[in-house]
Amino acid sequence: MVGLVVVSHSPKIVEGIKDLALQMIPEEIPLALSGGTSDGRLGTDFQRILTAINQVYSEDGVLILYDLGSALMSAEMAKESLPPEKQQNISILKVPIVEGAVTAAVEISLGKDMNSIINAFKEAGLEKSF
Amino acid sequence: MLSASDVIYVLEKMGTVIAENKEYLTELDSAIGDADHGINMTKGFDAVKSKLEDIKQKNIDNIGEILKITGMTLVSTVGGAAGPLYGTAFMKAALAVMGKTEVDIRDFQNIMEGALAGVKMRGKAEISDKTMVDALEPAVNILRESKDKELNEIELLNNVRLAALQGMEYTKGIQARKGRASYLGARSIGHQDPGATSSYLLLNTIYQTVEEIKGKDINGG
Image (tube, rainbow over all chains, first blue to last red):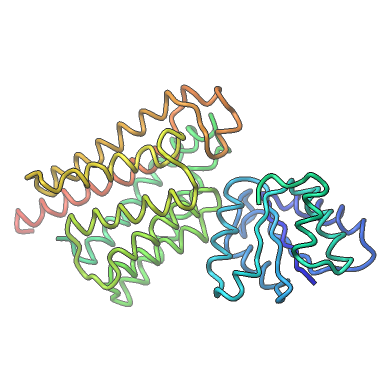
């Protein structure tokens, strides 16, 4: 199963997204959250994102969705800190974080691979740029 | 030439200056951003300060290693966009002087080239986007253009920080195209960019601290 990592500046946002996504699917999927910094501030934290990636990592890949600017930068740094053979299985995608997470959760629960999930984003008109 | 302990001293001074300007940076950021730049930077440089104590205890004199540790610490502790940006800047700067126990002005140019390339790669910003790049790129340009000029290190570092100062002031008149301020569109005009400001403060600290160090050398103390 593809793993899903949701990165936001706010822990409340990622918790809310998790609630919404889980409402749509019958069973648990590999989902990890990184909301806010480790000391409770609004922001993003490269270490927490890295931990989240490792929690859900498999060779099927990990999809990372993010909210604002520094979330992308921190996610990129977390990805770059992994060995190249892992990096190639990690996709950071620019899609609306709520719709993207719900769509991804459904696709993942159906056992779809990374390419199918990306296609599902396109079909739903979610992609901003890939 | 600066030794590893001089570089550590400069980094400590950076922490002091950032802490002194905590409110100022946050105030600038509250006008056009998320009002946390001063708080975040102080948090990051406080963490750097304690790492520098470790570095001193372990007698690490590889300047590249010192800059790398600084960058990694900033990435993990700053929290805002400045974490990945300054973190990448210091980590790319580190590559330029890895293994060196002394640095001269040309090494400093390489450090700054690395830092600028790192910031641009990470933030995908260019000049006039109203970001750190507006302070850093003119500073690097001064170093590039200085190769054929007969300036001593202190004069050159003074020109570098003045270029950064000018770049920082230039950000007041332009519209943000990157970062949180870009959401404000034209309303960002008239406000000085907090990131360009912290970049200027760091370059100003380098100038002032190197001048202090060299002054001591000349006076034999």
